[in-house]
Amino acid sequence: MNKLQELLDQLRALDPNDPGRWPLAVRLGVAITLFVLAAAGGYYFFVWKTQHPLLVEARAREVELLSTLENKARKAANLQAYKDQLAEMQKSFGAMLRQLPDKTEVPNLLVDISQTGLAAGLQEQLFQPRGEVRKDFYAELPISIRLAGDYHEMGTFAAGVAALPRIVTLHDIEIAPAGRGAGDPGNLILNVTAKTYRYLDEEDQGPDSGGKPGNAKKAGKSGAGK
Image (tube, rainbow, N blue to C red; front, side, top):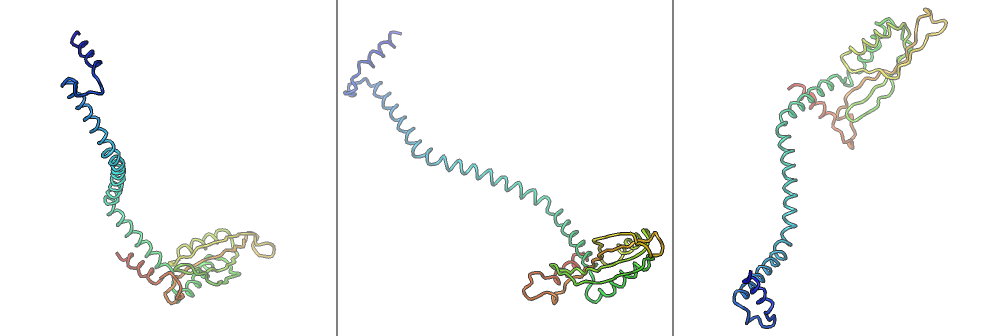
């Protein structure tokens, strides 16, 4: 305790203006302390202050790269499933394209639709093809149809249309009583728009058209044949 007190007394007696007369141990302690403070200050200003933002940025980049790597790893693991799904889609697309009639088949398809109604026992009152509506790689061919008959015959007609080898859809269906003077009081009138579709050949497209339906048809057939 006395030695500690003597050391404290010596420190109080030191002349800050004459460090050369300080005891050797004190001078060494002060020099070491100043060196440590200078080194810490130099490290902070010349290393930590300039490198710490780079470290933070590198860590954020590391997290981003790890996330990207995980996403790519998941995609790579599912690559075969994606290929199988694409092949199945191409096959289905090709099958659908083969159900679209070309120009030469449209007249026969119109006859098939008309004959489907007659075969169901319905009386045809109107069968009027309208102008085709062109889409990206196919054209809609709407047909206004009016048929008379009973409910079951109309159901048979709808089932017959669905069974046709080419795609035909029914729209704007309206069923109403036939009214007086129509024979059987149970008769109904069916007004419907039937739509069939045909694919557009390259020659059907203008030179400015962006679509290449002919290529789509070929791709569909190629995919379906796999």
